[in-house]
Length: 194
Image (cartoon, rainbow, N blue to C red; front, top):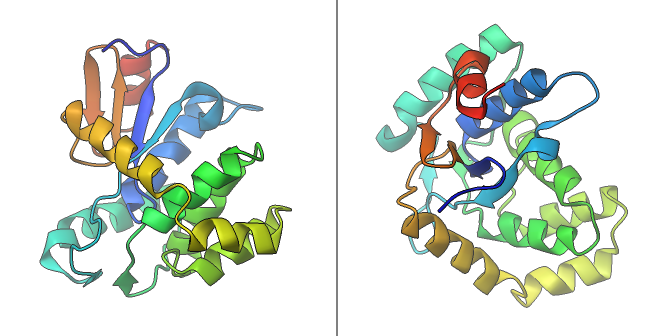
């Protein structure tokens, strides 16, 4: 598959996805953001019924060690909650936000809520609070999330990622090339030809 724009496969509970987006923001320059350059593709790393884990789980330890080291150099202080939530509802929320042209703002808010503010973005009430902050209707947002309006959309997006053999976040794919994990501006620039 040939991409017309670079595709970023990400998950909101992945600190390396967040840091990669920050690097892309710097790379694209003043007045632009990663959203202007990328096709965003969610990939829930631990979908239900995968058991919930805490940050000290051995499957996450290396990732968080790397992320905290990078974050210190990039001036970011992570403060996630101890329990790592399922992110399907958060990805469903972005689908809903896209209907109202605020998906970019929703993604940023979700990353910040989980990684910087310690919010449980697996909870509908937390997502509804973010919806209200973005100017969306509280009742409609809650109803959409309660009835799983976009659950199938998120599952389809996961299937598409798996069909492209993407199993890790962040993955930045462009044409036949891809970068998996965190890469600095030089590596990203090489992939993007900037």
